[in-house]
Length: 297
Image (cartoon, rainbow, N blue to C red; front, top):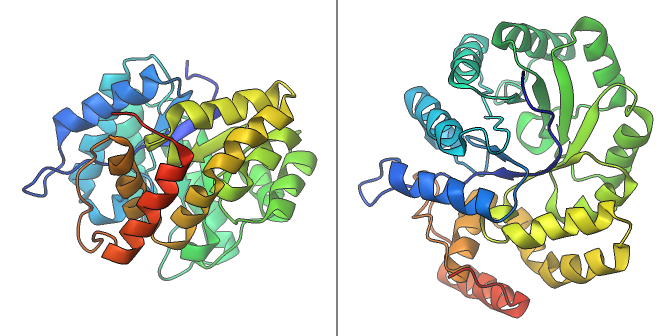
């Protein structure tokens, strides 16, 4: 029986060793750090985890390590999407066999499929995996926005999809999904600068990269919003908002690692083709992080 998903699910960064390989020891330690600081779930192998720079075998390895280290303490939902349906099925089935509670599935990107093809992709991969699917809407990358009519059509085709991660960046779309699709599916919001109003509106939570460097604060924003303590939630959200805004504009995975380094959480360097922030951008981010008062060293 898989666990119900809700709350703050960390989009887990992938630490790399000096030789460029996946740093298993650091990844295991980071899983413990996230769980110890209150995260409600973990999503390895997502955009924040630099999955596009990993081989298929490395993706399976990262997913397996996170599931193993979590050891049932919180749900784990690896991101297993691919440009190839066959590869997405292989990644998803392996994640399920390793004990994943769900999978996050980005639709094929680069050569965008048609609407009908995307529906078949979610249905085919989800039914093969045998665990619940979180449909990942990332229109800035995929070239297609998955809106409420899309999900209604998708749900007529398959029951495998039980959650949505909406990373459209539109608060209007987030509200539309929460208010008008809530009878059929749970919505997670994946855009940092709008998470709080989405939580207050009834979102299931967020699959979020910022918990890699601000786990307690991200959980507190959610918990306070759900408890109706909106002013207290906004105090934390406002304090961190400029950092959240930076992440969305300057290369999310790279900036997340840099922010983590600034608060004392060493996740290593990004992997090519991703590189370190330019010096002036790194200085800007460090100043913004310093203004938040965050410190996990």
